[in-house]
Image 1 (tube, helix red, strand yellow):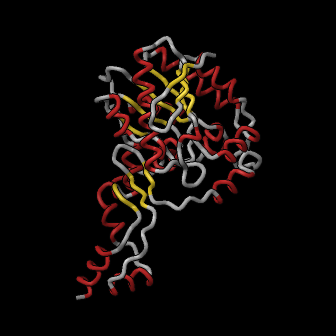
Image 2: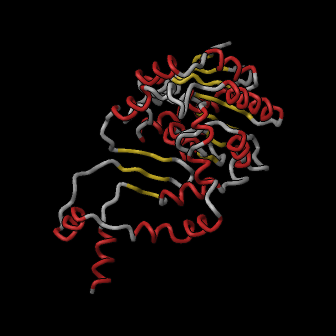
Image 3: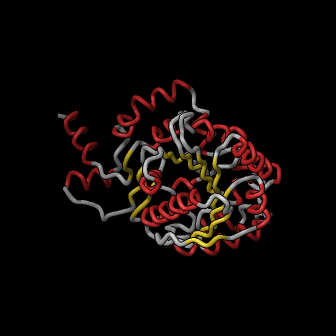
Amino acid sequence: MALAAGIYVGASRESSLRGLPKDLFYVEKVSWRNCADVVIGGDSRAQAGVSPVEVERVLSGPRVRNFGFGGLGYSEQYLAAVEDVLAPDAARKTILLGICPSNFTTGYVHQNGFTEYSGRSTNEKWIIRHFSRLLDFCQPVRLGEFLRIVSGTRRPRREIQTFEKHGWFATEGAKTDFTAELKKHENFYKGTANGPAQTQYIELLLEKVKTWRARKIEVYGFRPPVCEEIWETENRDSGMDWDDFVKKFVNAGGVWLNVDRRAYATFDGSHLTRESAIELSFDLATAIRTRVQSPSEIVWRVKGGGRHQFEVVRH
């Protein structure tokens, strides 16, 4: 009887999470090899902001994976892993990078979601692959949730977070609240934990872009949309000359996609809602598809909002 009651409570528990269990989602990600034509790289903004399924739909067929991780900094290890995700038989190998100043800070380069999960032991990864759903099912139930279950009442709808198998982490139904992200960014580039963007990591990425282009890999970059306050804080405090970086990215052989940040909605100031992520994915993929037809153009301005309007910007 107790076992049956436990199973009933576990099965009736309401969760804000959908798709793969979180740990399985990331363990599978760090294990990807030789499986994609298009790889999306970057931090949680890119991970939340670009849907591989939508990019596949617009580009009509290529295998797309979102290889983004929370708190990601562009290290040699991560950039090598991005390339490893590309399939040797890909007809047009493509890397799309979401880039923002925090990607070049010491803290994010050395400690992030990629380093966390790639550093898990073989035994840990095996347990996660085989038992993650069972472990999630067996998590303790809080008293308030238990009382709701046995009484048959349901809590008001809350945000839903979905870990999709192609690497997209989508959020819908979240209350719009910028407080936490604004506070995080107040002193983000001033403290010793992260500090300003470092030239050595910027140069590392630019050299990698040159290497990828020499290997006939197409490379695109964009700055994920954020709220105005965070955008201004990053420009003021990060120590990066953003226009100069874009010029160097283009000179290294990359194609820059200038995104209109005001055309997309975030729920916390830093991460797009599910609806806006689908719009951005559509716009980026359409820019890539259109640019393939006009290979001489090196910078596109994506005006956004799912309207795929473009303006060529030359540097």
